[in-house]
Image 1 (cartoon, rainbow, N blue to C red):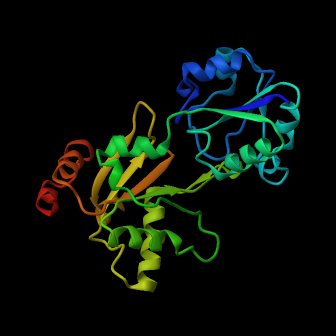
Image 2 (cartoon, rainbow, N blue to C red):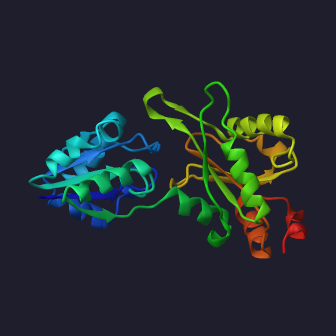
Length: 266
């Protein structure tokens, strides 16, 4: 049996891959890439093929999820297959399932980590990583909105923890959820639940294009962020819990938060 190496591509363009990741490509017999689990706005397949010197085989969601990654597993039967994944390779459960399947079949697996949105938004905002609770994805609206994001924010808030909300994308249809749209969906649930979890007076942090040369980070009350233009995708939202005084200072310095935020910190 050969092996599958999961390699992270980073967050924004073809320059996000690590030197270790490029090194793995040199000895790869087959190189696969998926670009549906996360949006990389400036990624150029043509430029990446020049940098890596390898031909890329694009793999679809159906091949990994419905067909259990048989294309990649077949290539790994007798050689080294590299699967290139946006961000950090094992953040998406799709890839965890493939790795489990491979190991059960006796195919060796390894990981070359990449920059993740989870750590990037924490670094950009200045919030403390150990104060984040469960993260959640706000899905693109299709009929009745899921109340799970609202419930996760509520659970974390009761514990004084921050909540990272990832905003859904659909690469095949070129659709992505914007910060304003995500907040409006949560306000609709608030109107129904009336638990005072997400209101116009709630402190919110919006993050756009993490990992790029022009990320945008803005912290303010929800009413203000509804009027803010965050530009192109991808977008994320943070709902802060209890703030340490250093976190308040970071949001003021890095995210243009209101000065009176200091008064609400510990």
